Length: 227
Figure 1: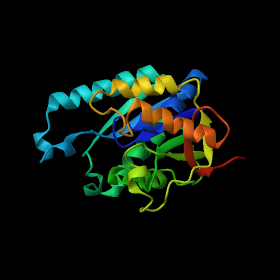
Figure 2: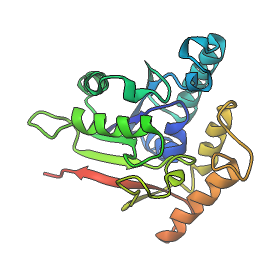
Figure 3: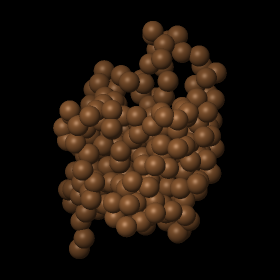
Figure 4: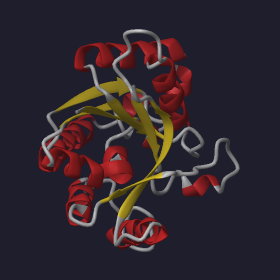
C-alpha cells in the first residue's frame, strides 16, 4: 500500500505518527512524507529576519529523519510558519492535490483539525478538500493524528476535539520514534515538555493501555472506503 503523511511542520510527522511510519516501512509499504511549511520563521518578528542557515539545518534534519524512519521520499514546502491562514486555502489545496496526483496514495495521515496551532487546522481542511472522494480519487483511507504540545494544549476548546478510534501498535518502533524526534535538535525538549522523550513514551503507553497494548499511536478515522 502507498501511504502519504502530510505534516504542517518539520517534527509533526514524528510526533504524530513516527512509530507508524517506521512500522509501515518495515512491513514493506511505501511511505511518502510531505511537510508543507518551512518550520521556524514565526520565532522571528518578521519572516524575512529568519536565519537561513537555521532553516537549512532544520530541513536537512527532516531529510535525515525521513531516511531514518524508512520513508521513500520527502517533499518540503515553503508555507510561512504559523501563518498558513495568510495563504489562500486554495493554494494549499492545490499543493496537496499535486502531491496526490503524483504519488497516488491509498492512505493519507494528516494533522488533526482541532489543534491549537492554526497551521495544523489549515492543513487538515486543505487535505480534506484535496482528497474529496470523487471518482478516480486514489485515497481510500484518511486518518488524522495528534501532535504533542498542540492537540492537548487546545484543551478541547476547538472543534473537533481529538477522538481517536484507530490505534496502531508501535511497541517495536517506539524507540525509533523517540530517536527520530531527538534528531530534531531544535524542536525536541526536556521533560516535562510534551515533546520530551519521557512524555512521548508516556503518551504511547497511555494509548496502548487504552486498547490492551504496550505502546500505540492513536488516529481519528476520517474516511475508510472499502469495496
